[in-house]
Every structure is written in C-alpha cells, then in structure tokens.
Amino acid sequence: MHLASRDGRRARYGLPASAVASLAVVLALWMGAVLVGPIRPALQELLKLAGLPSVVVAGLLMLAFGIVLASLGPAEATSEARVEPLLPRPSMPPGRRQRPVLSLHALEPGAGATSLCFNIGVRLAAEGLVPEGDGARRPRPVCLLQTGQLTHALGLEPAALSDYLSRNPVSVGEELVGLAVRHPTGCELLAVNEGVLNGQRLKLLIPLLRRFYDAILIDCPAGDRWLAEVAVDLSELVLPVALPTRRSASAAAAWADEAWRRGFEGRTAVVVNRIGAGDRVPAELVAGYLHQLQIPDDHLAAAGDSHGVPWVLVSASDAGRQLTEAVDAALAEFFRQESGRAA
Image (cartoon, rainbow, N blue to C red; front, side, top):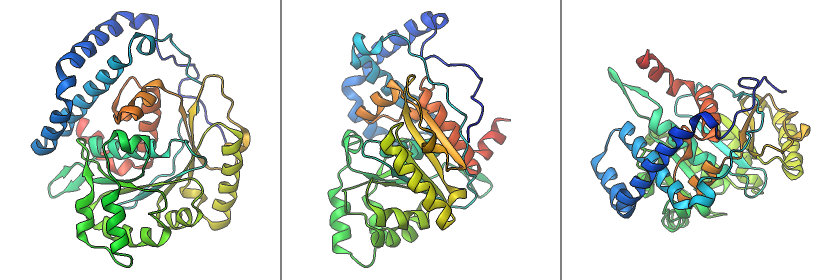
C-alpha cells in the first residue's frame, strides 16, 4: 500500500536559493568548532549536573552537530546537492497505551535499528510531554541498545549490565535503573552485548522498567528469533527495520506472514531505511503491511551516528523530518499537549 508523497515533488538536500544562508551557517559552525570543540566533554558533563531545560540542550546538541559537520572537511561538508527519493508519507499505528513499549527489529545486519531506537528516544525526551499534577513534564524514556558503532560513539559500556544480569538470573531490582546513562536530552541509555538480552531476561526487565520510565525502546538484533518473539508480545508498537535490498525483502515478507498469523499486524509498521535517490524499494518489502515508514539515505544522519549525535533534532535532516512525523503520529499522546500549549 502506497500513500501520496508529502508534496508530490522531489525534495532536494540543497537549493540554490539557500546559498547565502548556507554560507552563514557554515561560518557559525566553524566558529562553534573553534570555540566549543575542545570543551565538549566537559560541557556534556556540566549539562548532566545542571539539568538545563530541554530546549537549551537541544540547541547545544544542534551546535555540536554543526561541529561534527565542520570536522568533516570541505570534501564532505560541501558535497553537491543530491536529490531525495520520492517517498510516501509515514503511516503508523496509533499508540494509546500509557508507558508504551516499542521494539525495533533489524531484518539484516546494519539496517540501522540501533540508530532509529536512539533517535526515537531522543525525540520523546526532548519534545514530548506527560501530565503531572496541574502541569506537565518531559517524558523519561529508556533505550536498550545493542552494542556497536553508535554505542561506542555515545561512550556506553555494556559490561555493568551484563554483569548484573549474570548475577541476577531470576529477578531484577531497582538498582538496575542506576546502571542507565542519562543523555543530555533526558533519554536514558543501556548498552547490551549481543546474546545478553534473551527472551527470559526481557520478561524480567519490562515490568521493572515500566515503574520508572514513560516509554521503553528495545533494539533487537537480526537473527535472534526467541528475543524477537518475546519483544513482539510485550510491545505496543513493532518496527521491523529493513534496507531496500532483496535480503530485507525476503525477511520482511516472512515478518508480514508471521504478523498476520499471530494477529499483531495492526501494531506493526515496516521501516525501510536509507533509501537512495536511485533505489527502488522491492514491492514485496512493503506489500504485506498495513503501515510503513520510508527514510531517505541522509549524510547528516550518517555523520550523526558516527559521532553519537542525534540527527532527529536537526531541522536540515531529511531523515530526521521523516522520522519525526512518524514518531509524532505513533505516539501522539506525548505531543498533543505540546501542540495545545503552542496554540
């Protein structure tokens, strides 16, 4: 099922009319790199201690992202404008459950499930709201991330969680929450080595995490069938993450069959990640799904992942805008109050 594109037009990463603005941005980023780059680790630690408002944190993160771009050098940062593929608007199942669980399942290695899990958590923490008393507060999400390039860039160490789970095979306590690392946006992160988070341990973790967190995001690696089955049973929103390849298409078709057989097709949306301008999404990759999200291949997202910077907060990121629209639709309860406040 394909929906109409956002405007019916092809968007571009760069437009001639924005050349002057782009020059100003590059100058600002260069200044940020010179002035802030050497003290970035200390600045992040200061943010954790100061508890600054999320709008300030988001601004500083966008400055940090600019520093990343500045560090890429002229060959990468000033590459020729590329055409974004014509993509359908996101179609997502609406989530209405309090303290929802989202599971992301890589359909092949390198599909980008870890990056999407982290960026969804950041979007919730930085921009969402949950009612509290007579007002509202920012949500407290937690992401369970598989170890890899992104967790290394974020400075996450999986050893503490692995040791804790090995010492507590049949029960977990509140001390586990203290192992999470708080990102400056407010999202909390736990790194998990491959094979450590099995189905039985996930069943132990979720009831505990629900007591402390407003949303739980689980990054499931490709090939772990038992973990995937348990995660699906516990999740309100299930996101198989694919690439526009035949390998992913074959896996996605099997996932769709399983979803219809077990009755979770209504809370599943296939994510086709990193679609290039010349890529053709195989029809069988999305044909069996009621909902889908297609995300363009975005050099800003790639740079963010390699440096541990969330690209979903960067307005210039085409991937970020597509993911933001999808998250806001799937988890509307977290953003409805924000819209009302803006009105």
